Amino acid sequence: MPIKGRVLELPLKGMRIAELERFIDERGMFHEIFRSDWKELLEEDIIVQSNWSVTYPGIVRAWHRHLRGQVDYFIVVKGSIKVCAYDEESQHLVEVVLSDSKPQILRVPGHYWHGFKVVGNEPAILVYFTTRLYDYKNPDEERRPWNDKSIIPLKINGKTSDPRCGKPWDWFYPPHK
Image (tube, rainbow, N blue to C red):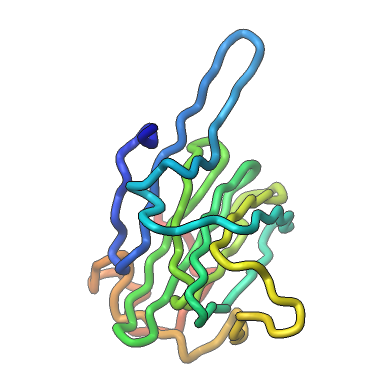
């Protein structure tokens, strides 16, 4: 069964996003949020764990990465978040807003530094799937502070013209006017 919308490749290799189908009738709504036969999104990935996270407005959960091959799949079921992934080698950052008003699934290869900030005035509920089990004794998580000044994107979403390029990443930079 193919995923409803087309799978869009984002500017960092391996990052993809796809719209999820919303079935609406007089009883309410239904979404498929994950299917193992969505090969155009998953390729050879096998999901082994799912998690549910609640984060309060204005909170930033960043930065971390996984160096043992983990891939994360993010779906916002309530609220909105801004997800960022940063390739330290190319200094390219990808920024995506996920929201319950437009259900999407985002694939983030774990070797990129990544994190998110809740945008809006309500808590965000994030359901995410991983291709590796969390190892309590030896976690596959390298961390750096959310406000690390050494994260300086030279490109944002494939563009060098963004006014945030060439400056330390600021999660609280005012939105576009």
